[in-house]
Image 1 (cartoon, rainbow, N blue to C red):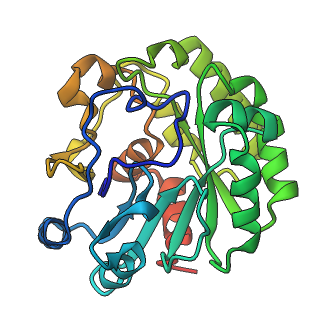
Image 2 (image 1 turned 90 degrees about the vertical axis):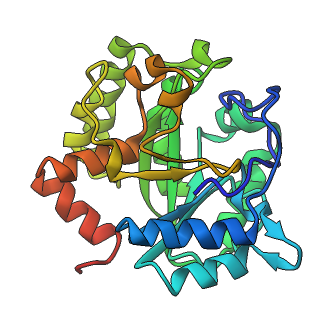
Length: 276
């Protein structure tokens, strides 16, 4: 659920920066209704994101209150954060956006953002933190340096997920074309085979190498801050051509699981502690 469109950064690859998209929070009542709807549809793992989800509140009822209530309903509750604020939430898993080694991360997310993020990761007591990298033309050159820096400088980070910049209107120029994406995949797979903690399965990466790769949209349900709920990614409703260049790693991973990839299934079980 994208619980808010408010954010405390202005990232270079973000389609909402400078746009006329309204800044709004979902209300507590809307979230209660959405969570029940998700449960009725069979959803058992909930991701809270934004915008910056930790900014969310409805009066005195704040993000941590929402997480605690969601954990009573779902097997696992995760969030995706830029970690500009302290990571003091009770999510079962926390993904932290780390889009480059210090200089490159600041180029993508703004001056001083790396230092704040790294400090909050180091000071957090959450035992299950992971890094999320979004690859674009801005930072793809920094891939290996970024992965090594995460492993060496952020020992609290347990694994790394990789996504590809999606060509939303206004940020298309930053999106890797398919030959560039294929070259990046080979580099990521090489890092994974060297033992770096890349969470994505090789199967999911291979899926994302073909324009318009097949997606079973109902595998993921996405709710937006305006209250709209869609199956799959809402980008395809904005422009179907965006869907042709999908780089959404979670969609690819879930699709690989649905297709019967044993490695993807086992990786997901381990990640979400369904089995040891």
